[in-house]
Amino acid sequence: AKIQLNLARDALELGAFLSVRQLDFEAFGRHVAQRYVLIQPFDLSSIRVVKVYYHDFNSMLEPSKFQFKILGLNLLGLLSHNRIAEFHTELELLSQQALQDECIKFPISLEQAMMEGAYTRVLEASRND
Image (tube, rainbow, N blue to C red; front, top):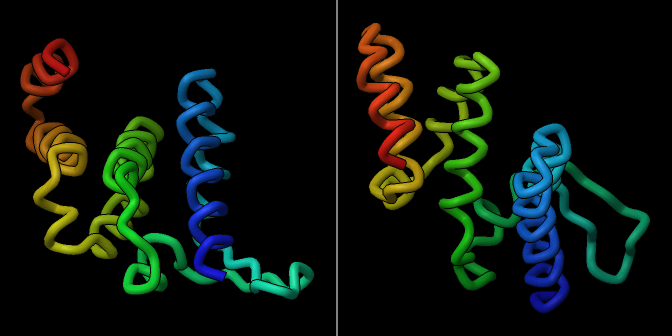
């Protein structure tokens, strides 16, 4: 079961990166949303919607080296589509460790600059990163 969960998580992460590479942001959103879907081992017809790969199975699975990059990209996507409420909901789900990662700090600082009306900081950030 652990191997199946690792494979499923890895496939969804790679699909998310491929979607970004192809500029298909709708597909990226689907891949990110699917990280919350658990396919029960040995019963592939049973699907429950739960926060699985990065939250519920974090004690069972090795940490993903792409987790914070994908979560950061998701936050940037929410910001770019002006989905501020969802942005803040996602932030509430993040651990303290995640909040210290550079991939997560960047969209947080962009959102803070936007809320303060400091658009020059937003433009500078887009030029630097």
